[in-house]
Amino acid sequence: MGEKVEDIGEFVLIIGDFHSPMRNLGLPDCFKDLLKTDKIKHVLCTGNVGSSENLELLKNIADSVHIAQGDMDDNFNFPEEISLNIGNFKIALTHGHQIIPWGDVNALMHWQKKYDSDIIIYGHTHKNSITQYEGKYFINPGSATGAFQPWVTKPIPSFILMAIAQNSIVVYVYEEKNGKTKVEMSELHK
Image (cartoon, rainbow, N blue to C red):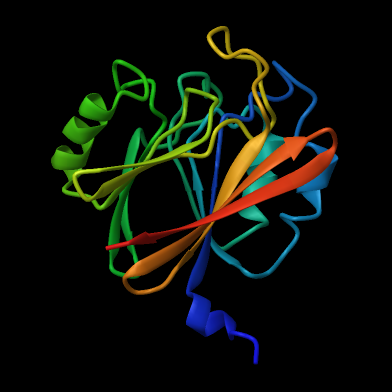
């Protein structure tokens, strides 16, 4: 017997750092079809959307779309920090250029304490990661397009899809490799 969507929880897309068309040609083709679904309930974007076309893409994925102001989002007026609850998880969303050193777990803990959140979602590093530290989670979706970043050798296009139930999350990390989608799954618990 298959699981019902209600049993899995709410699907949340975590995506960001498009930087298109400035630094790349856009989303890989293998990602485009994956994002054409009515199953995703929330979009959490770490910013650096790049273009109004990318903004429209995000708005067409779900009714609940939250976008943090990236350091290159000059044409948009998004909030710099966002706090919200999904299931029993309190989530804080920011671009990540404000967290110095970038991606550092001690700097991330400062943000976690500021928002008293279970999960901090951040970007800017262009490298996806999921880190658990002191019972909290720090999630970075990487760059959706694999956009150039001087400190990353060959950025890999990636995004994260989470299924958030009340006290647990199933996380799917999607990466583009040679035109194909590679997916890794893990579970997070409160």
